[in-house]
Image (cartoon, rainbow, N blue to C red; front, side, top):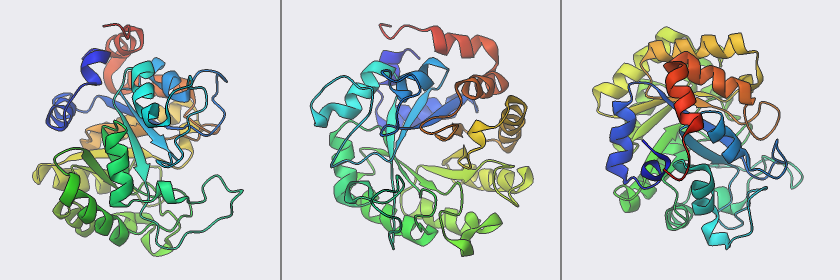
Length: 299
């Protein structure tokens, strides 16, 4: 797909195109309120230039939308401006936080505009988001039960208008949901029942106890129920060496995942650019990687 095609997909087309790509879709997460690695160029544009197909905006506040490096625009146009400049589908994280932690000086501390409420989801849709990811940032105390409850409320109103992704890539401060208990078949069943289109899972080797075999079983279960899977690197290993990234990429490919997610904390704000490229080459080769990197946004 060309950038113009990718940024004008409806929900059905978006999900169909991912499924048709057979495990060759790269999703890169970025933090817009962190200083961009290229200072005056958004991290969203940078990850797109390194081969990402999909962009996830983390710590994005729908009440106070802010992406450093973005040209001046009306606040309501922030997401659409990112899509225009990066030429990629763009979604945001919303967090079903039960008991907020942290201080005002903590970048991860919750704000009302980041919570997984129906009101915030509706604002995201109005701002042009292609999808919403219901998950938790480090230490914020997001449980799978809370994710399911938020999904149910949001999907009842918006399931036909936006793609919903749900799951956890680390414990998010819930010690009872660590290791293999981060996400189970029971959790996945609840997410799907409550409207999830894509199930988010930790990538093999990123969380203690999460093996390729375990994730493979969960991905198969997701596919048996007609949904898509996204394996995620959310444990700062997006800043690891390229050999580690390459190994994680191949292990994720072996699980059967549909979307390969790479996190936002290589340093702070996005994965190391060379790791996005390495991941892309490992999962789809240089031809598709260079094609994605080189294609003009005017197409």
